[in-house]
Image (cartoon, rainbow, N blue to C red):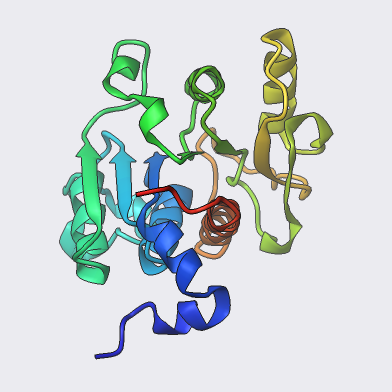
Length: 232
């Protein structure tokens, strides 16, 4: 019987499929960006995915979040995305954490168990703490900068935080990473000038955070398949 990964295997080969199946990735924040990261990782055959988020799905999420539908309003995001992952790949091991990543919850996560960490959270404090903890454990991490108030998904780039520009969130993160001596921090950011709106709440559209998430997932997959297969 044809595997759901047969077309992917044509591109990356059987050995790399095995690498992904033996990989464990944690995605912190499964909203507009993080949800599409998880979607792509599940469809590429990553064997174990940890999803971390405390939010529930609201009507305002429907315009951009892959798990947000009218039927899912009020449902916990991690439960909705866990169901979706298992519908895609029942063999995937999914660990769902109904919490935000905070000083009082960070000890719930052993970063040495992860092959990769994706930061798709909203706050600078949590982003810095995720990067610090990942660096301490020697675990790879990619951090998403601002995706709100943007309309052009072609302006996204992968870069070291020190080489970013334009993005207001990246500017703050550059300064704070430098102050903490955090080096070689891989991020996704946009060179598009943010659209000015009349609200303090960031504006969003379906095709920007989704593209950001898919670019991040592609970077994670490329890095994972560059690793040697573990001995077992």
